[in-house]
Structures are given as structure tokens and as C-alpha cells.
Length: 206
Image (cartoon, rainbow, N blue to C red; front, side, top):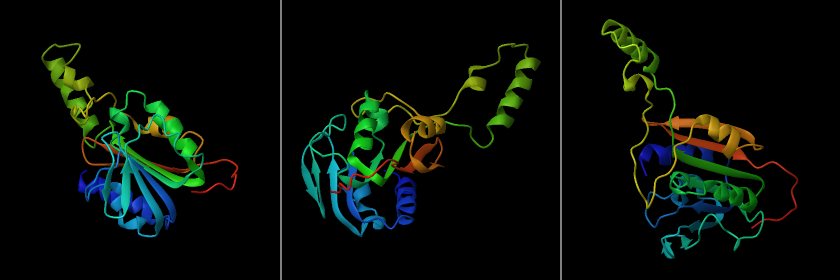
């Protein structure tokens, strides 16, 4: 994980004074995994899941669980759910999103990061310049670069299926959540979204 992404997750979590139980989807047994965020120092319990297998690291366990089916966890088991660089590798990412909504408690925090795409700083100027050149060289359709969007390159772990926009985060990932915020770091962009699960609490906690 790039240090800038780790730092951005930590900033988001620091503002929440997190306590209780934390789940990381796609956790890895190394220092860069999100369960090592300084902001989680007050967590009562930290659990990671990863299809790669069971492992232990520092103060948490990583369980061999498919995020599409986390039925081993009861509804509203976690106060916080973190997920970075997973959904683009998940052919059925909507199943994982449904499970995230189920296992996080009402009022709990969800933070998700993925590679994305969006308008970069000088994109409009570059496109206008290319359009002028296209007219000059009598290319009415222009060049492919005029219509391209930069994204993170393909990285198969084991597959690489999707890239997501900020609109996807607002209208799909965090639809119905409260206090939604979307951030973008690095270039091509990695988008990080956070929100609070809305609903009526059942009093269930992990």
C-alpha cells in the first residue's frame, strides 16, 4: 500500500476517535495493512479477512474468508469496517458491499478505497490543445488521447476487473449512508470514501 493511501485512511479514522471492533477486508500480515493505523490504537478488537489464508500479525488475526460471504459474522458485528484495493479485484463486488452493510453496526464507520478515474488538474487545457492540433492537421475525429482517462495499470491479484468514479462512491458504495466524504489521492487517482451506516440500531455490538 502506498504511504499516502495509508496516511489518508488514518486521517479519516483519526477524526472519529474509533473504539470497539474493527474489521479489515483484504488485510495482509505486514506493517502496511490498515489494522496497523495509529488511529486504531483504541480499538478493543481487530480482525482481518483475506482469501489467501489464516495468519497472525501483531495484535490481530487474519482469517481465510471470502468477503462475498461473511456469514460467520453476525449482523452488526463491527463498529468499523475498512477495505482498500479489494473491490477492483472482486468480480462480484456488490456482494461484498452488501456484506459490509450487514456486518457494520448502525452508526458504525465504513471506509473504502479503490483505484479510480476522474478529471486531472490540467486535463481541460490538454484536451483543448489537442483539439486545436487535430483541426490544424485536419483530423476531425481527433486522437484517441483526447478521449482517454488515466487509471492505475492492470494488476492481477488474481484478477483486475473494475475502476470506479467518485460518483460510484456517492451513489452506489455509500448510498443511504450518513456523513459521506470522498477523497482522492495520488495520480492516477485512488479514491477513498467514508460514511456512517444509517438505520435503527438493534443494540447489537461485537
